[in-house]
Length: 327
Image 1 (cartoon, rainbow, N blue to C red):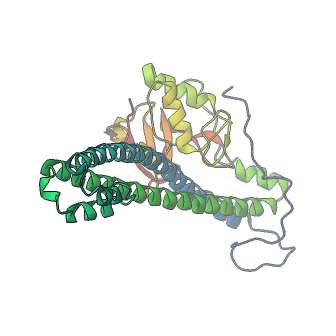
Image 2: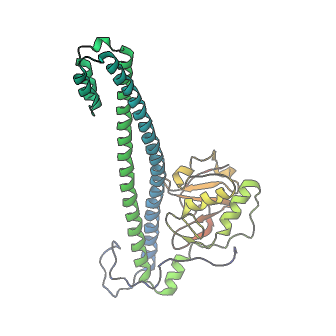
Image 3: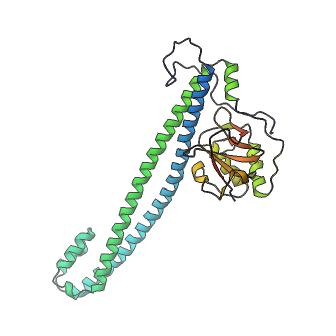
């Protein structure tokens, strides 16, 4: 459905807005907004929201990795605790054998200790310590230290998880704030002006793109989404952000990519602009916060912004940074 318009403009019409946040100097309530000023500010807000969205995507990736590490560390800590308990039992049995029939009350006090460090302290002061197996005592000490190390690592990772969760909340708040302001600006325009503004980046998609193999499959997926909505953090099936679209497109070709434009920039070998081929990923802005897919003839397909949705555009319609070739 490449020539049809199935684009969705979420929440850009029918809004009752009282005042505008951050839009230039104060203006009278009935003043008509200047279309050029609105266009410039909306572009800026969409871009700032996308930057926050891509940071949000990066943080989600980091959070998944941290949670995976945390689960591994907790499992390792539990295994280490089991090993420590096994060595402790060996030491206890040795104490009982050494002191059977002599000084059992003192031994009993040691055996009921719930504090591993206290256990070591009491054990080291017993008059019969010289009779215990030195290697067994050393094993217990080493296992206890290993458990402490694992506990510290687990606690550190848990703190990192909490920090990233807080970062996610901040980025989500910024996305919502920028989008709300852009929608408020658009709501002040007449319907025809608004439609013209949000559709100004839309270009007629090519009838076909010469590509085959994995690149062909990725392009076919991306082009089939032209007209779909842009939603921050989305990766289909009917709405996408920029890196969500390229991730899903190349995923359809059997190539796994992270849901992050900056991370995708490291997903394959770099390609010079003069060597671009259909299917290559192209990146924009510094720091990188937008990605599209090259489809040939100086054109790209990309999830542009909440106004334009998934569309095609000239390669240099945004500040170009570079390209990579996945797969």
